[in-house]
Amino acid sequence: MKRIEIKQLFSDSAQPLINTPVNVRGWVRTKRGNKNVAFIALNDGSTIKNIQIVVDLANFDDELMRHITTGACISADGILVASQGAGQSVEIQAQNILLYGEADPNTYPLQKKGHSMEFLREIGHLRPRTNTFGAVLRMRHHMAYAIHTFFHERGFFYFHTPLITASDCEGAGEMFQVTTLDLKNPPRLPDGSIDYSQDFFGKQTSLTVSGQLEGELGATALGKIYTFGPTFRAENSNTPRHLAEFWMIEPEMAFYDIDDLTALEEEFIKYLVRWALDHCADDLQFLNDMIDKGLIARLQSVVDTDFVRLPYTEGIAILEEAIKNGHKFEFPVFWGADLASEHERFLVEQHFKKPVIMTDYPKDIKAFYMKQNNDGRTVQGTDVLFPQIGEIIGGSVREESYDKLMRRIQEMNIPMKDMWWYLDTRRYGTCPHAGFGLGFERLMLFVTGMANIRDVIPFPRTPKTAEF
Ligand code: 4AD
Ligand code: MG
Image (cartoon, rainbow, N blue to C red; front, side, top):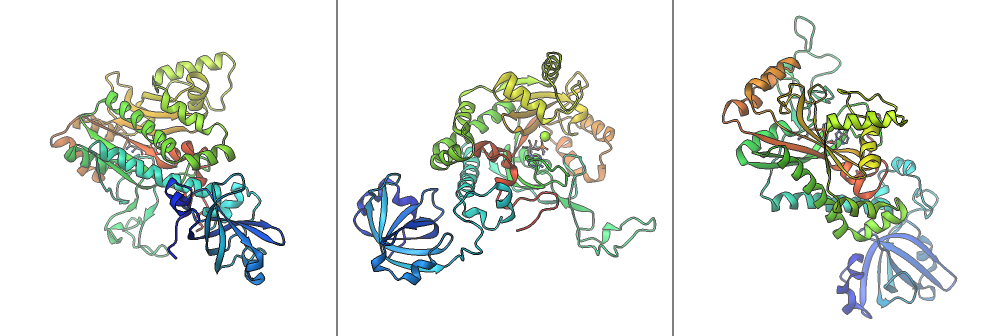
């Protein structure tokens, strides 16, 4: 019999199937019942919903039924009927059950009771089979699809930037080195330093922290591009918002000024959040019930409100005023300080009560490529700050003047030999342009209501963990 996905059984298209035989295949979530009848809740991953399979035990082998326990994989044939019980629209009256694989209840770690997120991280190979991770991972797919749709609809081109690179885009020195040299006995130059000319690429290389620099090459040829790929940062931040391997979406647009840039940032996030509300209703409802009761209301409010535009200097004044009025922050607030997530969240959650796009940061806390303002001390950087998350997007208008960019590169001691190709964008047909990076997992934190970034990516990479 042709298999049908459980998602379909709960859709309108299942109406003609009622009172006909169907086949479903999936993993047993629970089995309960009595001497005469068993109720199996079966999930196949296509939806958060389980199909109930009603088994008349008189017609089934005891030995087979004993092996049908939580986690086992089965194929079930039966008649689809309108359900008598509350909570489900249809169920299946079993006629035949095939056991693909048992899951010994003495060792299978996922049992009926709820498990802590910490425990589930230790069994990362099995946690996609839980309701929560099923919901998160389905939503991850929908968000990725929405991102491509958003850009495609607006004439952006998906531009593939390299993962292995010889330049440090953010200049923070937080890169994972890529090498085939023998670490026990690397070739050395006369001065004792490592001779990278003998390495695989003939130079020192790393995993990229951002596709932006190459993205700018795309934008200054194709007009509007975006990247969507993994990025890697060897920053030792063990926080609920940092991963060592995360996915980033980086659009880059020729002829965009700061107002065009912030307008796109706002439109993009609202589009994605609306997409989640429109396309992930069942999973969102589950997460709203089980993880975060304020989730759906928060998503709706982001879609409905205008984001604040706030120059950094005004933001600092608000924070200083709050301190005067008795608010305590862990980290100091002064003009020139890099804002901590407590400051960002104060502005968003307590002061404005809506998302904030902060602009015009002190140049010394931002990357070399940002467009310099005429005041000589700020740059046209923009961070989008979100409730619960803090920074979700970082972006800027780019410095298009060759001379100004060179001066900044020299001031910041950025190795020039790695930058010649980037500088050529400013040497040949330079143009005003801008772009930003959205951290995909920060977006996933926001749309799922999950508290820890380790729980919105299938296989998290963080300091001291690379299991699975
Ligand atoms: O602010 P960042 O460092 O900006 C850039 O990399 C620019 N090159 C982007 C651009 O203009 N094209 O990073 C961008 C975003 C952050 O706002 C945050 O959402 C996310 O990437 N991010 C991280 N997400 C998870 N773990 C980390 N360690 C992250 N570091 C940054
Ligand atoms: Mg940033």
